[in-house]
Image (cartoon, helix red, strand yellow):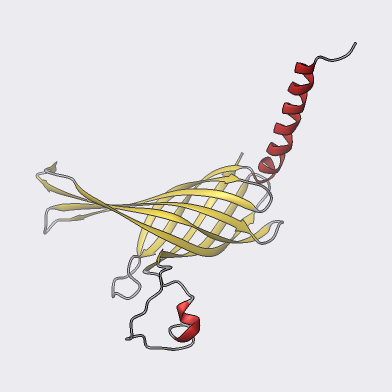
Length: 201
């Protein structure tokens, strides 16, 4: 009994889906939490501030993964009767440089940084003024896998990257700050240290 054309196509489709899903399953889908220390302006005098947040990671093969992370920080300025909330969201492509339990990686992608100011009086919010900034980020880090279903990581990220170059004449020079090499290096406005843990399914 010869199989029908429809059954052959159905079998080929299932086989193709399994072939595509196998590398993704090797990396897995993960969800976790993280803590970040953020400096919005590396040239300013402000100290780094702590953010708490979460992330998801989706494997795109043995060497690639997509991460979407959301962090949160809220503070009240009682002398101004204001509540300030910071909510950065980052989408990062991770490229793993090695396989095994210790996996260094490079990362990069876009980020949206929302700041909301809420004037209040007697615990009643009077208004909500918010702005959102966009900026690219890139960095490096490593993940340590403790079995197939758990891992923890740490990384450093340059934020608000500027790839347009800087032609100002007031550059202080140096090996990386000026000259020919400096023209090809992106500048950055902020930085972020991140540590976190991920549960994979």
